[in-house]
Amino acid sequence: MKKVLAIGILSLAMFSCKTSTNTKNDVPTQIKLKGEWTLTNVKYPSGYKVTSFNVADAKCFEGSQWKFVSNNNTGTVTLNNNSANCPQYNSKIIWNIKQDTSFNLKFIGDDKAKHVTTGYNLTASNITDNTFELIDNSTEATIVYSFVKNNK
Image (cartoon, rainbow, N blue to C red; front, side, top):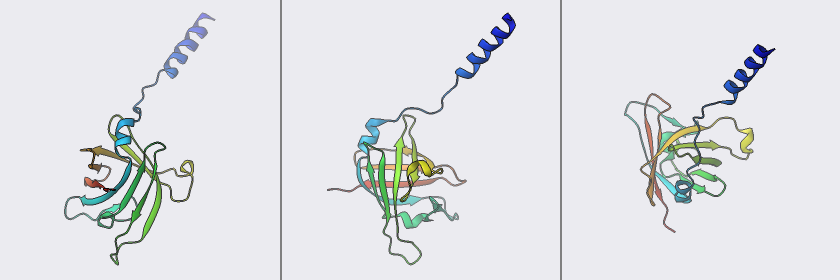
């Protein structure tokens, strides 16, 4: 009986101790991103064809408008590039920045966030009051999205 009890306690201890790679939201940085931004430049190595966020060619995102609402981590993305090769696109988003600088992003359109199971994990970098970058290392080529805050 003591062995069963000991094994039970040991099992409970092993399963209750978990390591967490997820960190808390970086609220001050999220507040700094509050507002409307323009994605001014998308950089990646030449020779690659990059489709950003499964929406359009990466260059179609240049000039796109992004709105970040920090109190509920929502926002919108609007592509307004008038090139014949670029679609018109508008989507609601859910986003957050963790204390480890990971930037999580979901394009939800008109769906509820809980029904959208895919998203993107990027890295937030070089954050100032008027500029920041999102870096995507998930493909074989690093993609850097550069943003400038809209003055209003």
